[in-house]
Image (tube, rainbow, N blue to C red; front, top):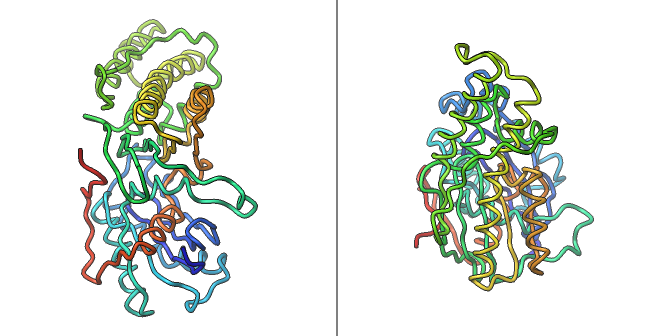
Length: 354
């Protein structure tokens, strides 16, 4: 790929993010405005609130990304933007902003699938990481986030074969729900991870949905079981009639550990089996849940034991960001992909089909 710069925009959910990427992998700037504080009181993302926040923040975020990159418009080869999947209102803010920039500055526009961005985050590198090896094809990609959880095979750039996906809830959604049940607040994933680190007993057993030999996943049953197990723990603590009463910290830690262990067990086992059965030469993992320390550690250990390289971005590049859209956008730009100014948001945009 050429050494030009890609300006990339991500606004699919609750982060307003803009980056400048060089050569398809080198991060020149990567600015993210998070809306966690806005949505925490409601315990989840409110779409209208998210869209309005994007409108307020997208210009300041662009200015910060521009300053950090120390770039000029003459250096920008193309503009990449997430156009799906995601929240319709949030996507529209980013898409329309990107189209306006492309028109004003006469630059090619590249529509990028948000899920593809999570995969291509594995190719990103910070200054000083130039010698790190790229993922090797064929590979298996695990994307695990608040809205999506799936396994895909890649035999070359931009080619995907879906191996399995969640049949109901995404892993990140399950983390958020159980985090609320445990009184840990929003977002639940990081809170459960922190609580689990202080667990002592490690004897809380939550069910695993293995689904036979399938690579599909399911977390709705685990959520239901978690509600029951937490209710039983509340009753044991003498709070059966008060669902809002706080559980003892050590009980919360043990429950958080048990839930996290169940999710990680299934994700790791299915990913490793997918890699073995497809003959993968590497594994990549992306998405917000990929920032979970236990998942990263367990998958690293299992992959290393089999001699399969695992590439996982640093946690800040696992959650939504503009740099990952730039990495995917640069690859599409090099392949000759272009979008017109009629590009529209596609909230249900798929990555791959069986």
